[in-house]
Length: 190
Image (cartoon, rainbow, N blue to C red; front, side):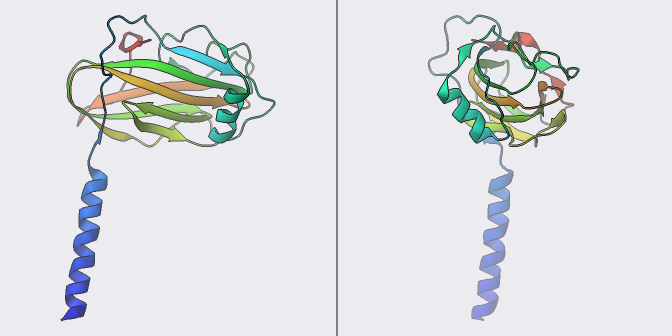
């Protein structure tokens, strides 16, 4: 009897853990909501000799960074090799700290992912919603299901790096059950 009860308890625990893991990540809106925002996203750049991980990217920013021209949004198509990365000064070995806000017009459950080349850790509303720690061609992160409790501005904080070759950075979003679409530049502010 004890074995049957133990097996039942283990199965119930796994089912509950799976259900909890499947719950959307709840985002926290900016508090207070910003009174006015400029369009786009603020960005700071570092230019290390090499960068292969998010940890190295973070360390490079701590050693020194400089403000870059704001990004219009997060729709940066895959470049040709040698093209400048984002709004930085060079094509390769670029680290970017991107900050600002993203606006959700309606509360609800949404799916979010990013296309990135190379590494990315993106937080919205205090939660990690996209991450890839390494090198890849322009490819997607794992999709994250999020809950947006109220319409409004949500803080965005992203760490991005590009090592060699081409670069890209995109954000896609779709309401639960709907097709994912590129986030328009108008959804971002700083």
